Length: 378
Image (cartoon, rainbow, N blue to C red; front, top):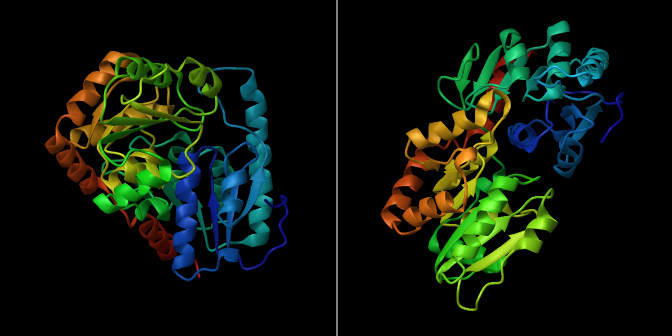
């Protein structure tokens, strides 16, 4: 992490935005792709928010990050929005002053609150701007600034942004390296303490978790308690971890194998070990499922901005790569029915895996980096 007035020279690219992992993870992947194309890491600066995940993830990835003050603006009228607007204006002025000193060759906006300040600064100083949009339905920040962008790198065909180029959504290198061959699956299961034989279901719903998902899983585990040949690894999330663990049923020996973890630090291993995933449908999640070719049941987050998670999930369902359960319809009965169908039909899982891979764009980060180079000045 760096102060708001970094003393650095030779900044080639500023990557602006963040907040959630869905913005930060692709941003880091773009940064790594630029490094792979010959741009030293010291010439790439991230601009994010003090409240976002970038404050931890970007330095851990080896990049410098400037953290701006403020928070996002709520979609509904609220007195808190007054402070949020003041904070956004202050962040924009700080970004403008910073960009005047750095004068990078290109600014890449990945969406999220802090991307607006970085994009405004690029517009003021006429620095080439490239938008990188993760979702089928663009977020508000990128919709606001894309009209000024030289190009919009989008994840899905038909994404309504000007000068759109379909690149896919950048994915972490460790996910690109996932090995779902029988040997790779066996190794991943051994490292996670999962049974070598039988079927594995991976269930996760974000770093905070989702109460409806967690309750549905607990009900399913209870009804499947004596089922052999199946293991469930349940990534609960931070918010309801203690209460979910306390409610977990006792399971008989020889029946269902059920693991509970708060976070999954090695999602690459879980995606390699699993036969089916149950997850939310954020852009990074569905992009990772596509790259590894993992059949999935997607439960879109209700109330997501622009209902973008439903848009992402529908793209996968229409392609035959996933089954969608609306959040309001999720319970242990519906979840059990959908899992029963997939676990019993290896051919259906194989077809979904192939359909998912057809949606994958493993070179997405390199494509966005190439677009940035094409439009950069100098």
